[in-house]
Length: 113
Ligand code: 5GP
Ligand code: ZN
Image (spheres, rainbow, N blue to C red):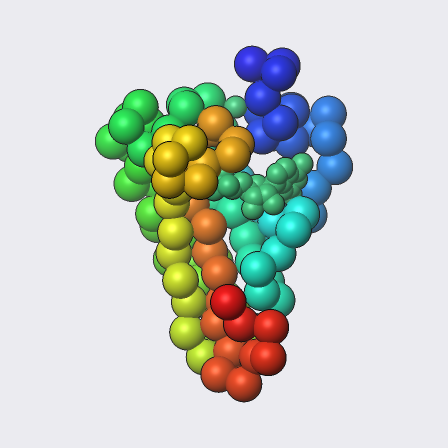
């Protein structure tokens, strides 16, 4: 999947700021963050979206997202966290390699959307 930007990140062909890695998943900072600490959790095996990702990769990504969210609260001082998945063009998916957004939220953030 050399035309997939996230597969290229996994392969080390594109730079990224990795915050978590395990056997099945990798998490890195979003290039266009919605908040401080906005990260993306992806499976190392390519699948297009929520409908295609296998149950083991989905479970691994969910656990990794929980870890990244916990770290955002404990280390970044987030007051809450949104987990988000966009599945399909009509749900605003723009990168077609399954991913979970981990978006830390801050009570007094003026940029909050
Ligand atoms: P989607 O819109 O598919 O739910 O989310 C795709 C996300 O990937 C967006 O938030 C976008 O900023 C992020 N993104 C797109 N290209 C890159 C990239 O090359 N590097 C990183 N770190 N994030 C990317
Ligand atoms: Zn991919």
